[in-house]
View 1 (cartoon, one colour):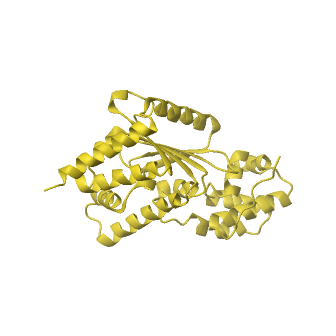
View 2 (view 1 turned 135 degrees about the vertical axis):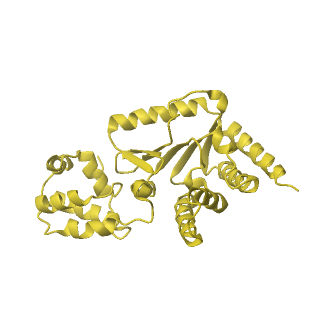
View 3 (view 1 turned 90 degrees about the horizontal axis):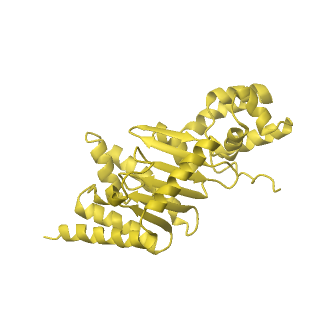
Length: 279
């Protein structure tokens, strides 16, 4: 069985902490399960910390310093590793997203962040924060577009989106903005960079009516599920819970239009919006 993937400590503060945690744990002769036991967390959680897919909280850092006798190393460096340009409820998921090998996302109302255009992102943030300064909106848009650079790589991560038909019909930013956004999604699909399906209104009820769902897998860490609501988000790693959400996603895909039918619908709706925008 191959050993764990080598970490690049220079890639991020979390990768640095993860690499050091793995080194100190192995130096102490502890398994991930043995280190997790006094922290009341699973061995897989320790593995996610070592892989950098989960953020180290201060309470764990302090306890690890005690167990591994690291003279406050983890506590001193924990603060730098928890700083993020994303909202608190989403920051850990965004950072995990950047390391994922596959991302599967169900979007019930809005175009997923990784697929948004500048115009769509700006319209969305402005609608959500009508009194924010232009500088504040600019920073939010820049962070959103920076995330989308994940798809600049021609092969990884594998990104598969199931979009509710409501995503296509909601005119965020007006007809011109939504037309551009839908054409961008269709272009990514036509270039085989993403897989996209549309779940039509005609599909009726389904298991994810209550909100969005994001599933992430990693090369050397257990999979994660992220559920997001209004100003809230939960990153889940319990194997049974993640397996349940994977089933939910599979059923959504089975009820959705095929990728080719979906691209045709997306392009057709974009064309309708473009015609609306004509004088």
